[in-house]
Length: 158
Image 1 (cartoon, rainbow, N blue to C red):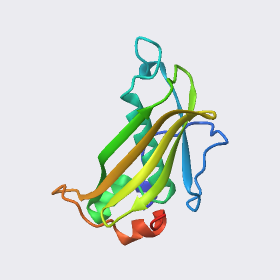
Image 2 (cartoon, helix red, strand yellow; image 1 turned 60 degrees about the vertical axis):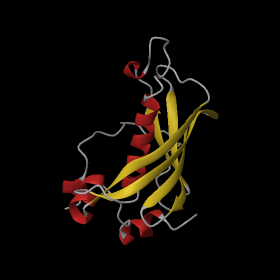
Image 3 (cartoon, rainbow, N blue to C red; image 1 turned 90 degrees about the vertical axis):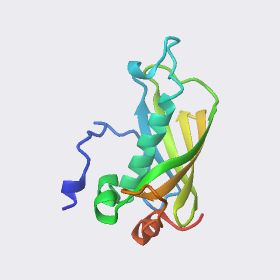
Image 4 (cartoon, rainbow, N blue to C red; image 1 turned 120 degrees about the horizontal axis):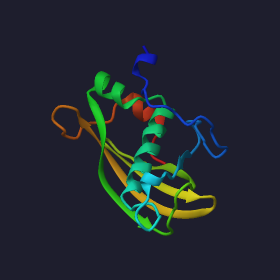
């Protein structure tokens, strides 16, 4: 059954050393390479594309903790949506850069999760983000409690 719920999306062929998938670790990291399509006329990452990088890392963060978003919807009738995001653009990333996108749990409530996310190139911080995601019912889109099984795996208030 678990294989049926896996995403058909391919993973990178080679994983770099900065990826941390162990659920007990506080900070989760996911690699992203900047493709030509991610850049603007100036040759830097178009500002809105950082949101895509952040989303991918959050999806992989959940997956590393044992949750496929499609399974959450099918089994629990819930999904996570972005309620609020604040971005601080610090330095531009460019075509072919290898970036690290992190996810750090800041707070978990009854129906929301607060996260800190960073986009780095090596030790340089390119973008810092404060993200709040909300758990909603898949039909009504109204806030609902985060399933206990999810809370147990992603951790209590940190």
